[in-house]
Amino acid sequence: MSSQEPVRPAETEYHEYYSTYVDKVPHADVLEQLASGVRVTAKLLETVPADGETFRYGEGKWSIREVIGHMLDTERVFGFRALWAARLDPAAQPGMDQDVWAAASNAHHRPLEDLLQEFDDVRRSHVAMFRGFDGGDWGRTLEASGCTFTVRALAHILVGHEIHHRGILEARYLPALAAP
Image (tube, rainbow, N blue to C red):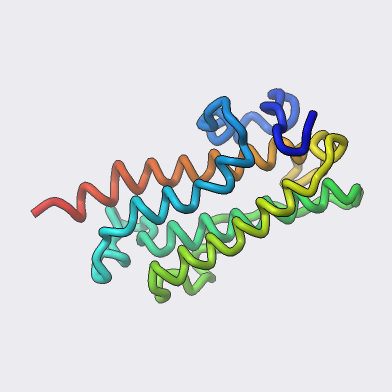
């Protein structure tokens, strides 16, 4: 396998919970999707007015800014996990409680433009990291959140996670903002 064209992960390369994300990834070059995804998300949100950035579609739901903050946190955690696995460190990694992280973040109080720029910066770093992996790196594993993941699966989870949240933004946030 070329570092530029990792194959789709087998179902044994990640916990079934993450199939929600892996299944959303089209059968195409995952590295290209990593490289272009943030631009697609930013384009989707370019018409959100400043006063709409803090919109929540329901009680207890995250604001648009918090959704992007969550995507950014997840990007960092899963990118770090991929690096951890690629470097063959045998120590298990802890889980991430997304609600605890979101509540402790400052995302709701940051401009959407800043969050998207930071997301793009982190993603570019991850694309460079993944492109630097060789064929043997993609199948390396780590234990995180009590589950085993391969580097290949983590790349797909990152892409699918972004697609998942982009879909929620399209279905639940943007229509409500456009409604009179």
